[in-house]
Length: 141
Image (cartoon, rainbow, N blue to C red; front, side, top):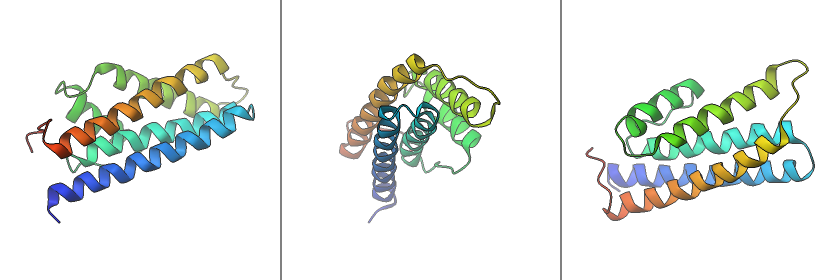
């Protein structure tokens, strides 16, 4: 297996984890456990960002590190739309507030909207990975 193939396999692994965390979040949301759902949704986004970072051999297990690397390798270079960076910021803030702030009241409509957007990003990242694997997108690595 080539180093490039290893990166693609790792990216696909992260997408699988992202989809699992997303599905976990949906179960929690459907049980009206929105704070826990927001937590799982963040992890779905975290793993999706790591999936594309794996293509550049830059995946990380540190939360702020993933965000920084994601912006550096994919947003600032124009490989991905800035809306994904903004989404990351929003979902991270909701997760941190719901996990750590006392008396935080979660905005259920915002979480519902975030679920739609994160699902879109997971699907987009999955297609992006397939395009890199097939050679339709060149990352210049």
